[in-house]
Length: 281
Image (cartoon, rainbow, N blue to C red; front, side, top):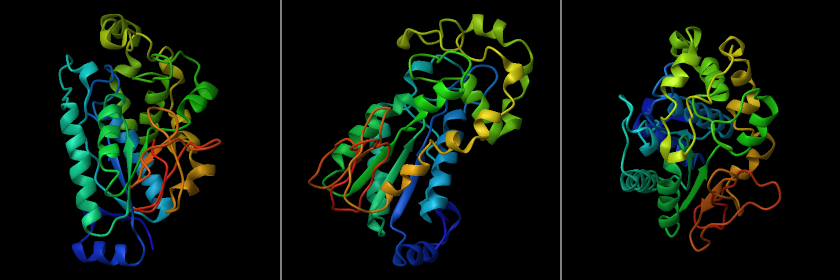
């Protein structure tokens, strides 16, 4: 059994995949929001799709097309940013989960790519707990990996936005989309964007890329970055009783009758079969 891309499959392909035991599905949930003058609006979607694809390949799972819009309230003033209401994000998660469960998927893993999606995605997962397993992954281990490789400050504590880390990852995934302004005076652009993120009380763009010459995509190509550093703990996604955790640290899975809980020990990811206790993030 191999990875099956839902958008490229026929209905009989899906039927056969699920019948052969492929009941784990991954949903990248991104956003369309500004990432400075040097990165595309699709930055968050590119990254969460890459993570979801790697995981789906590893587990021979079903890969759903990404949701390319999210709740990006903190960047809504920038042209090109398209923000959804939190209730819309929750409704999308719920509808997609119910749909995939209807044809045999037992565990849906939502790979969240944007800070603004966290609350509504977790709210949806908790509401769905009575019906099936939903695991929310929010780049577990990102802070540790970032601290190990970054030479510039975080945009805000534990948050990267259009900075060295995100720029490097986009250069690794889609270098053609990170050209332009990267080579033409970001410091000037940073000063213009100084007050871009008042809701977060941090000049995110100003704290972004300090040394464009260094950003050749090397950090982004490191497997542990693009994979969200889930390699040694990814087996927790296999259907089994477990536990996990929300909002930016460990993953959290919501399961029937078990609700949400944190991963024990180093738990950075979790999962479980439908109807069994697992780990919500």
